[in-house]
Image (tube, rainbow, N blue to C red; front, side, top):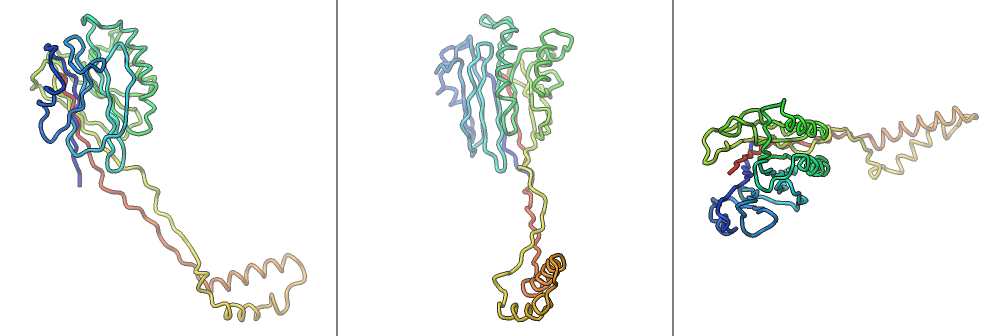
Length: 289
């Protein structure tokens, strides 16, 4: 059986600098919880800074996680404890170069490299997503090639290959380890209340690998009838006329004792098999507002 657990991760841009966290919560549909990270940890959403957020369908188990602050992009993260594994999602918003407080691209590359130094070594499955405001549709662009080279250096792959904005640019990305088992299936719809299209990512969340079936053998030594065992032992040549040299003596000792154990405490063989549970799938969505 397959199970679905939708997680929505967002970058929001609000022109009203009086928007409060309470007003954002009023926009949260049941049965979802909103985990919001406004710019610079402010309790109000700045018109110059925006923020990132997660909408997660309840019930869910969130594990402690954190992301360092960087001057060139907004970031937040959430780590979920799933049935048989963990998943960390890192949400990125990099403002466009036309933005008043935007940092030079070289600063972003340095910051993002520092971010990846810790993120890319996450000990479980992870996904990096968000609005990077880089034209990934133009590989000849210098900024694009530098960014892709950085991903390659950290053994990461970018999975969005269709326009994510109404101006036919790829700005919203889905990034995983190149060795991931998540098998991301990425799609989008052109219906959106903003100039960015929703990007849908379906992930395959597999349980931790199980050891293959093994055979275990044991003897029921506690069930040996000591009297009967000694009676049989005394009848063997090892006791009545033992060999004179060491080699034949050791051989007779091993052969006779093995034969006696097979008779009085025979070997029991059991197959140990761990059944793998059904593989769930995890549905995630990126909406940039």
